Length: 302
Image 1 (cartoon, rainbow, N blue to C red):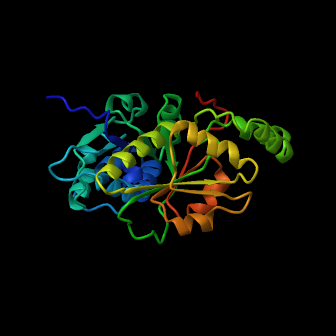
Image 2 (image 1 turned 120 degrees about the vertical axis):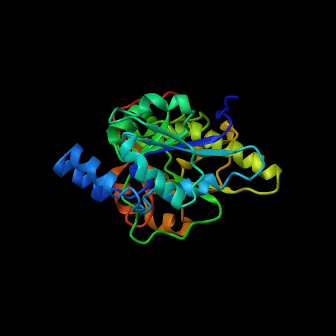
C-alpha cells in the first residue's frame, strides 16, 4: 500500500548538507568524476562527519514515536550515482538515522523530484538546485559550512526565520532598497492592517504550526520557532497582524531595528537560521547553522 507523505513534515536534504563532503567535493573539482567515484568506492566504509544540516535532520526524525503514525520524514536527495552513494548510506546507518528514502539523480538536477516526495523544505549545497526548488514553490536554502563549534543538539526542533523575503514577500524590502528607510516605514505604517503576501517559507511555517498544534493536544510541543527580523517599530505591526491573519503564533519574535542578529541567534540556539541577505548569513554562519535563500530578482506569490 502506498504511503501518503502529505501529512508529514518532509525535509529533503542533499548529501552535502547532511554530511561534510568538502574534501570529496574538492577532489571532484580538481580531478574529475572518475577520481571522485574511485575515492568514494575505495572508502565506502569510512564514516562521513556530520554536515550543517545533520542536527536538524536528527531533530526532525525525533518527532516520530515508535508505534504511532509518522509525523516527519527525511529524504536524502543527492546528485550521486547509485555506486557512489554506498558511503552515504553506510554513514546514515552508522549514526542511526531513520532515513529510508532517497533520490539519486546521477548528476541531474534534483528539483523536478521534490513535489513527488511532498518535500516541504529542501536543503542543499548547490545554488542552482535551490533556485529551481524555489521557482517550483518549495522552501529551499543553500547551506553554509557547519560551524566549527556547533551547539549541543536540543530536544526540540528550533528554527529561526528572517521575515521579509522569507516568511513574507519581498514587497516591503523592495521599497526599502529603492527609496530608503523613511519610505519603508511610511509604506508599512500605511498598510499596517493589510496582511503581507506570503513568502517562500510561509507554507513551511504553516506546516510547523500544524504540527505544534497537534503535538500540543498530546501534551508536548517539540518545535520552537523564532522570527528574527531587522524591522523595528512601527513596522512591526504589519508583521504581527499578518501572523494573526494566518492563524499562526511564532514562539519568539525579535524586532531588532538594525541591531545585528548573530547574538540573538546564539541565545536562541536554532538548529538552523534562514535569511535572504548574504551579509546576515555570513555573520551568523560561523556560529549558527545557516541557510541562505537566494530570492533576489524573484517574485513570491501570495
